[in-house]
Length: 302
Image 1 (cartoon, rainbow, N blue to C red):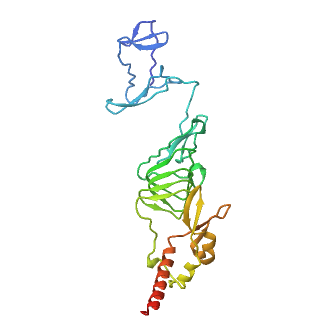
Image 2: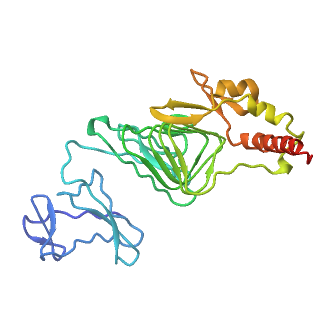
Image 3: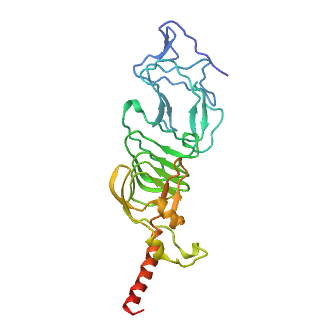
């Protein structure tokens, strides 16, 4: 049965050291606690809102009352805010999200970053525990970072489907099951794993850059024919590219006429062409061998 405490006489103690004055329920002894302790399984209830004044905390003590966790409001609040909690527990690792009107629901973690152009340069640091991941950033299948200024620095490994970067990227490791596009410099101190990597800047690796070449992964293996003749059709050039002078290389369109398998055409507005210089090594090896045979023939040692 619930018991109600009457106010008694104004300013006079009731129930021992508890007093009531002007609807204020307090302790007669200074700094003493006021404890509501129902008998048995009873609970202390309020039939209306319960308010903690003066930005003080609502404390939830542990089982032996030694320590507690607490909630409190900011020192100043411009208007009243009420949050309504969800009606059930959420899925593991879900977060509480607001609808902007005070109703909280459980939501899958997502990440969306936007540069604050009004405040100038910003640095964004992302950290996550082992096993954590970010997905569906900007409500798409791609994780995209596009700071106006500053760098994106990753101390662990970034993994995902497709990644696009417009700034300088420095990463301990980088892995993507799709493609990666870089608008500036890329520095990898660990392992770079990607389906396709496109960069308009420089790519710097502290270690080796390798590609799978295991015989067991290949089929229809044949030798390269007329390697020297194909090399002789290629023309080295000096040029300016991306504002950098004194660049040396080949022209993709010319290479494509001789070795179309060495040229990749991007799916962009220009249909930008790129050369697989790494695979050119096999052609040069065979061309040198052919040239060596010609030299031996001229010396009469063939």
